[in-house]
Image (cartoon, rainbow, N blue to C red; front, side, top):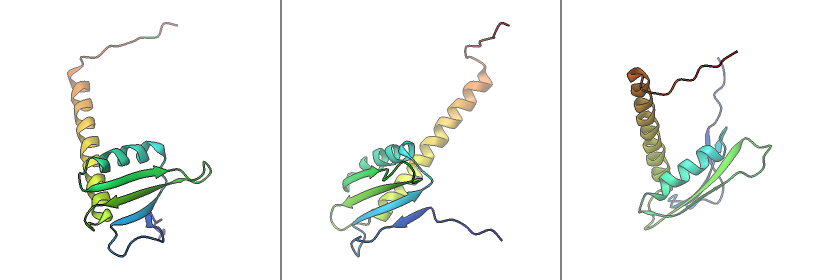
Length: 111
């Protein structure tokens, strides 16, 4: 049986209630980091969120989340991931509907 790889890790230094924590998210880059940061910052209970790519040779991002009122940053992260998934599903649905309508510009290469 193949071993599963860890996708998200909570780094040392997180508060016990996870109101402030830094998460390492593996196999992701600026594309996911920026989209996730944007989605997290839409939450009014979030005090701060930022991400970084520690080094180009490392295939991970680090995401820092700080919450107001001792709320859980993990809950904010999971909520943002679900919301981002919903947005992607919506965009895919609109794209597929557009393809079935056939109302798009076609380009034919001439040899």
